Length: 563
Picture 1 (spheres, rainbow, N blue to C red):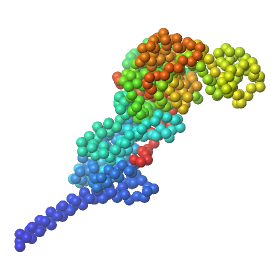
Picture 2: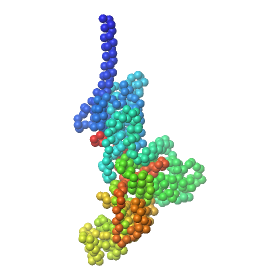
Picture 3: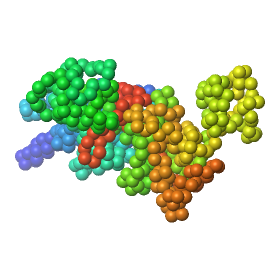
Picture 4: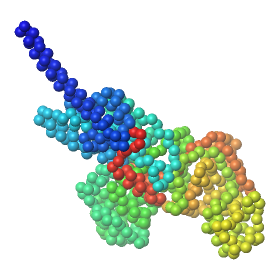
């Protein structure tokens, strides 16, 4: 009987201990379940007062594991959870906002957990459940943002028009694999855009944060906006030179040195200015003009914002632009690159649209070339430019090798029209410029049909390519090296010799050549990137597109429908 009572006592004690452990686990699971299920369809789920961003994926993730905690183990916060918190903080180097991923709330829970741990205690079940759910929610939203971007380009005022087939991310499965394999960072990095340049740009942004930390601890310069009415040339004296010297020293463009005349633009500063000019896409002539002053006024914080915006743009790009051949035009850099197996085999300066005729961002496929093209003048240009010019000079059309066409395509004699009475809004004729050296499209145009009616073409105005700011067209892209570009496009066909291309460019009628394949064309707008050597490059925001994206990135919201 005595042994029976002892056995019962031990069973009772063991059962109580087991029940306490079971209730503890069930307690956390219960809190997780209630946080995800006790809300109306109009409300977003919340845990301990913190609203969650995910609804579908997070509920599926916990539902498949019967709402058991994913991160919390035996009432403890393990190293893997700390790794996730660390990665949330690191998201700023992707140009994202850690606040979007519950960084402040998690830091508070972790601090209180560590304080309790010193006293041999742990957090209550409801708070441990909150930690678990917030870490999961953070992983889901960070994964979505790293892969697809935080900002939806379709919601921007500036149209994007580069379609991307959003892949099924299955973030709940990725998280399960990361937890089982013990690799949060590896799992998140797998969601980066697959372009090598992304990681280089990310490293550049990390450097800029280091620069900002130096800047805040020890401001080498005043960094008030510099202004000048005229260019400053080497050996000239200017009261801004001491401040310019400090800024160049901050960025590492010059070393500390003793000056003879503090206000003189000396040789050491010229070297530093040229380095700055190269980084910001200017001709490194050493002359301090408006563009150089604008670059000198850029603080680390400003460059961080620019870098963040362009990392986001890179996340919007479809993987299809990694095809074996790609024609890439960066309008902010005024440059076209022909890529073959990711190597740049051809580069040319280009002229792009003016700010009020901005070249759009889009992708299409180049399918043919037109040598010796005619130019059908757009109605808007006919009304605003051609008709006023003819009214001033009746020989204008003849001097430009232009013809008037009626609705049937017949040629109309300009002398038969009373130009004094012409109303531009009701002008019934089409203006066409014939092939030739003076044709506005030059000797060739390269066609990739699109809804924007934008294409790449030659131009008779060759001197314009020497300008730094080449936002000069009505929206189309003028190329400096049309012959070499055509040669690359036709390299598959040995019959298209140099001589044959030159002859095709100088015919009285159009010569259309269909390519043997369709080549992807991407017209993008990148104001920051980094090369393979880690060098950072910045360009002026000629179309004013960065600010809207920067604002959207800074906003503390991560909600995306359907996640």
